Length: 233
Ligand SMILES: NC(=O)c1ccc[n+]([C@@H]2O[C@H](COP(=O)([O-])OP(=O)(O)OC[C@H]3O[C@@H](n4cnc5c(N)ncnc54)[C@H](O)[C@@H]3O)[C@@H](O)[C@H]2O)c1
Ligand SMILES: O=C(O)C1=N[C@H](C(=O)O)CCC1
Image (cartoon, rainbow, N blue to C red; front, side, top):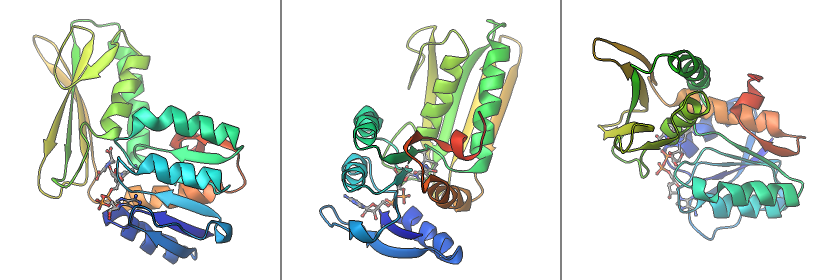
């Protein structure tokens, strides 16, 4: 595949290495606002940029008929616009808050646990996410997806940085050193705690997942997520 990378920071560089090892060609590396890749020479775009720039990058790809994979977090207010543009352009767009296989399996476990716990109101969920100190957004995109998974499968209706009501899931964000990404969900009662945790040992799983998603997206039309790639439906 001929790939453009939007964002050439920690993730962009790792994706470059993994995509090249899988015999793909990185045609263009965009790391500055306003730079425009040679859209006509591309098969797919991969965006790991910043919360402020993701929607613009994704829109430019869709307007130029280039399928686009995005892993950028912290821009989800703009997601409906990207979704609408993709459908209007009959394009292809794939977003995931987390591309690692382990986290996507963890999403399924979280939904199953939420369903099970919904019958036991003595237990209340809390979430903790830990990332590196360079991270621009909080809570993490992964934590938001996990909270949505609980909301879909319980009587909880919202998430927040604190327990603002009995129907709210509190998310605590910690920023420590170079932590690649840790997510913990705990259900506490008066007498005990049940908890599940995913710990990324490094960022390789995120980068490989994004390349696999880009390979999968070629030839498709519509708006997709990692559940489609991994056939988890
Ligand atoms: N979905 C996942 O699996 C996953 C995994 C890791 C990181 N992320 C997310 O990916 C994003 C990037 O993470 P990172 O650690 O590589 O960050 P980073 O800060 O190392 O890299 C971001 C890069 O984007 C560049 N940039 C700024 N404006 C731009 C623009 N308009 N167009 C293109 N590039 C621009 C910056 O110069 C920077 O080099 C973050 O939102 C992060 O949360 C997602
Ligand atoms: O390093 C980051 O930044 C990460 N961002 C994603 C998120 O916000 O969930 C995925 C994990 C790493």
